[in-house]
Amino acid sequence: MKKGGASMLQLQGAKNLAQALGSMVQASMLSTADASRLTALVQSSEDSEDDADELGAPAAAVYESHSGNIVDTLTDLLDKAEEQLDALRKKETQNVHAFEMLQQSLKDEIKYAQQDF
Image (cartoon, rainbow, N blue to C red; front, top):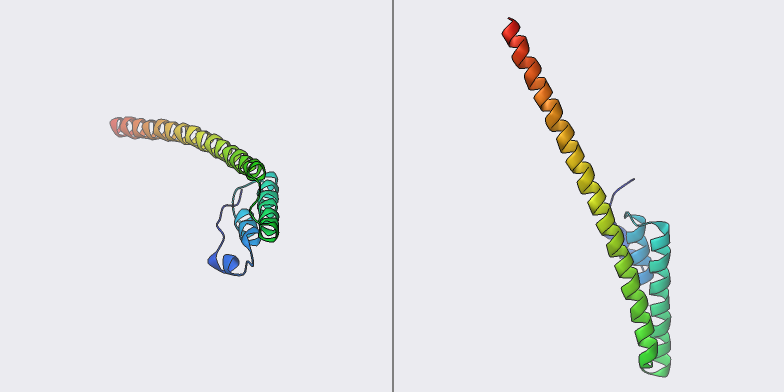
């Protein structure tokens, strides 16, 4: 999987928060499902901000429902990040063990080869 980050040039060309997040999502390890959820979340929050500007402050119930979506999305992203971290740590441990075994094998080969001479 390609890793990278959104360059500042990509972010400077963004005209709003949705475009900036879109650039960052395209350059990151987020899945398309997560990207679409973040986009929908940002668009719904922008729509609610537009409505709030036109009609005054939103009702408390409306505000709470939007914050729940944000918290759920961020919690899901945190869970996925922790799963990825656990998988990478496990793979790293396995790779370290394989390296140490290979290193010991090579040292033993050298030791016994020197004894034969």
